[in-house]
Amino acid sequence: MLNCKKNSIIFIVSLVAIAATIYFKTRETWKVIELGRIHQSVINGFLFSPDGKIIATYNDRKVTLWNLEAEQIRTLSSDTTKAKIKSFVFSPDGQLMVTASNTGVTLWNTQGKQLWTSPFITQDYYHIPVVDFHPDGKMIVARGNKEVKLWNLNGEEIQTLHHKETIEAFRFSLDRQTIATLSPQEVKLWSRSGEELQILKRSGLTTPLRVSTKGYGWFEYVNFSPDGRTIITIDSGNVNLWSQEGKLLRNLSTLMVADVAPNSNNTAILTLHPQGARLWNYQGKLLYFFEHLDMSYSRGISWSPDNQIVATAGSSGVTLWNAEDGKRIQTLPRISLWNILENIDHHSCEAVSFSSNGQIIAAICKFPGTGVFSPGVFKDGLRLWSRDGQELWTPDENGYDSYVFSPDSQTLAVKHEGQLILLKLSVRKR
Image (tube, rainbow, N blue to C red; front, side, top):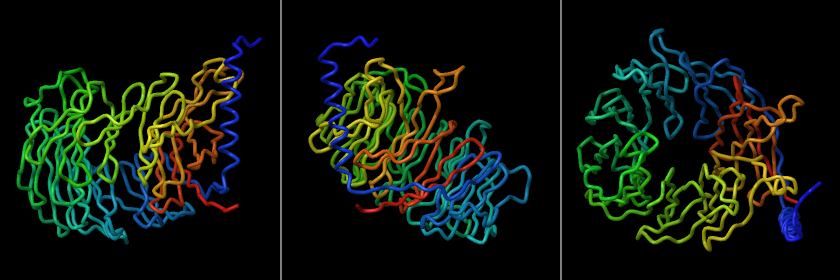
């Protein structure tokens, strides 16, 4: 017997009507077709080549390249059994590949030939080396424990960037001229040639300390504004904006911040909080507070590529917001009668993102099991929606934990336990 008030029924009917209106306005029909499955006992990571025609998987022993039909092209493996691959990336033009292991950095060509290897041993067993190409493709950057090394494409070391503490991350400015390195108590800015330009220190902050996810009073995040003039950091749940000269400009929030996402046109910054997200301009003015109606816990944020929509993921699903006026567009999946009346958290979502063309939204969501003995067990599943709210794909299996779109938005790779599922995304105009 349902126990609810008349106003609740009116509210539910209104929501259903809104959802139906959105659905019937859809002018495109999406098709999701499984292209193939890559079976490997262990997959530590996977990514597409810049042209979207190759998918690479890697584990400790090797990197394997596949076509979009899940057919193996070639394998990259080290000559020594001591090397355990921890990081892999394509060059921006897709013509080179680089791996970082516990013993060194190796550059490969597309035929799988080793071009050179440079020793690079991390001092901390638990600190995973990370490697990347500079955005111009002419330099390789690798993070170890307390240092970041720079090489040219001939394998010649350009410079070593040092910190006194463990380096947690590094970032490139969009103008490609500055590198930021992050350690718990300071952020350092470097020129592309490795010259130290500036140090941002925690000791200069006046914002209150809080216990963060990594400890008491740590830098947790660093990024550049799109124009490169502002450095954004998260420190103990506070978002701080700095000038290139190392001056603290302003603090954006007094709430615990879990993530930050600047938009691509250099006009606004999105911050993630437990009960929603906040939108700020670079002058520190709060523009909008995207608060979930049911005060559900927030777990992710994302901008659409055109900066018109903000997506927030949380215990009530994925909510889309208009970035221009701050109004809620809709919540995905659509609210059902039994979810509202029973107040069951059936659609907790995280890891939300848009495809590069902005037409598809993906998230890892939990949904209840249907087994006789475990109806309350929640499964991890990938959910896909079109931008206007049409649900495109719901898995019939659990165990999904990560995904990535191809650069052209036509293929999606989804990790499912010991395999990688390749999905073709296509649209047909009505």
